Length: 77
Image (cartoon, rainbow, N blue to C red; front, side):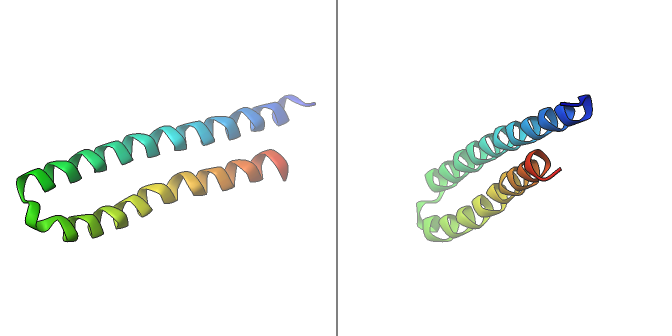
């Protein structure tokens, strides 16, 4: 195994790990802000929940893309 191939493996692992960490932090912040909004104005709960799900989908898109790219780097390159 060449040095460049092992660097690609390490880069793929780092890409997956940082994507998961970033997604976890983002989901935690979103959930906290959602609960703060519900505590302040409970009547807005349906609207806030819809916006929460849209934001969660956008936050989760990045790690899914990162996993796809890293798996491509590990297995196809």
